[in-house]
Image (cartoon, rainbow, N blue to C red; front, side, top):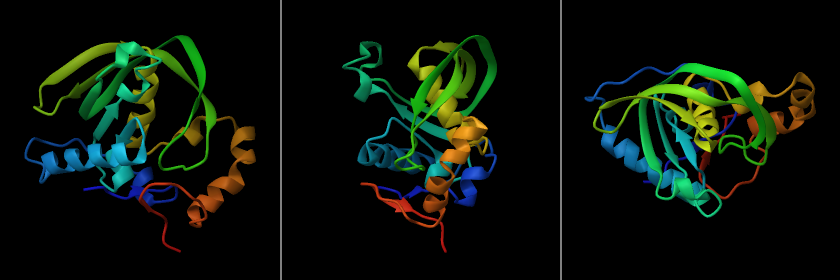
Length: 186
C-alpha cells in the first residue's frame, strides 16, 4: 500500500526514533509498504518518520542511479536500527540534496565521504562496515531523519534564511508534488 509522505512541519519528523525488535507489529508489511511508497514517489531513500513511524527503519534503492553509477545496479537494502558509529572527516564533499518531505527544495550539503555504520538487515542479522561513495551521502541523509534532523538543518544560516519562505509554505500546505502526502494540519 502506498503510504502518504509526511511533509516538513510534521512533529514526527523531529522525533528521535527508537530501536525496534523482530516482534515489532506489522514490520514486514511496513517494509513492503515503504518500498511501494518509495517507488511511487521516485525517491532513492525513505525513513520511517517520513511515513509517520518513530522507529529506526529506512529503505534505500540506488538502482535508479545505476546508469550513471553501475556499482549500484540492483542495490536495494533495508536498514533496521542503523547507527552511524564513526565519521571520517578527512574528506568532505558538498552536493545538492533534496527530500521527499521537502518537495521542490534542493540545497548543497557538506558531508563526510566515508562513515562507519552498524545496522540489522530484514532478518535481524547484524552488519558493521565502513561505507564510501554516494551511498554514504544517502545513508547520512536517511539516518538523519531517524535522529529528528533534516538536510535543511545542515545548510548555512544564510541559505536557511533564503529558503525560509519556502519552508513556511510547506508548513502551510502550499506545495505541489506528484505523490501522496500528509501535510501539517492547519
